Image 1 (spheres, protein in one colour):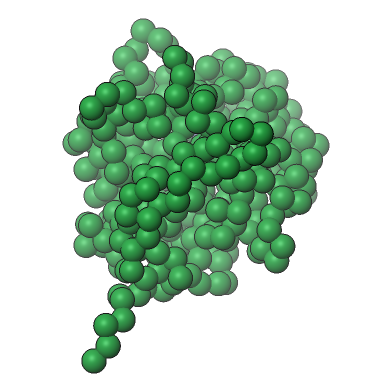
Image 2: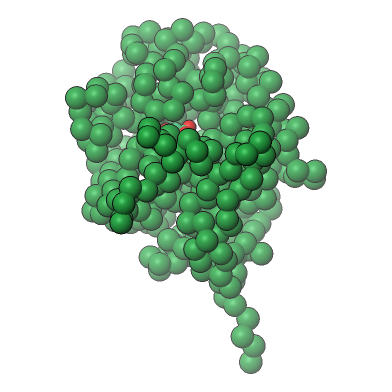
Length: 350
Ligand code: DOR
Ligand code: ZN
């Protein structure tokens, strides 16, 4: 008889939505993702944003140079869609293997989105071109009308904007990023089988609801966009993620900000989950009795939707427990607080 902890092995996951930033922050956070994942879709919302192929190549090279020696992690670059995006440049960047996808932020939806799309007519030629070449559009699905309640912005986007976008570009592959509502789950279930709509689900939206942000006081480290919603939505997300349905996949939206920028009179949106991304999802899947569905969600569904091969390598998780690391030192008196820092998770990557 042995008392070996329970283990599971799965194909190496990819992160289909990740913020890596630049400079010292990039150098500090990248090793976390590189240690766990095969690839990541890298968000382009830098200041200034990554709007064209030339800029994306420079950013990709900065990421590659910051990788730990021997790492096989591959960044998959995205273009930040603006009213002025050039369809020819996007197509050329895609053909060259620089761009994997294009990110649509409605103007002013979130961090560094001031250059986002204000007029869907203006971007129609780019979206038509992407549909033609099979390049996915990654959508931050929230309306930006400040008169719409912040907790309703995703549902209103799904009701009013998404149908027009899909109706106008029926052949365009769309990923509804970081869904947070039962409306998001429902629309992806409705259109998923058609092969043109899928969604990423973050680990934190599977773990917190909107009340979590106010437990015992205001908790700025749980503030992100889209903001966490009611408990019924969290439960809908957990059911979707653990269902094994191919249109839901792993995308952390891990978004590091200096602690000082979070703990502020006007704190930034973003939750840093990359330090223990796989362990956080494993915790949720185990709690739901669905560890057998983790590999599909984390490692198979994303590549299938993007039309990319799955990773060749595997990871093993062990149910021996892990304490989420304390603050991550970025240098220059800057630090980042990982989600659930100091708390115990049941699974650890071996
Ligand atoms: O919480 C968020 N943080 N949501 C986003 O959409 C952007 C991200 C960031 O870049 O900090
Ligand atoms: Zn994001």
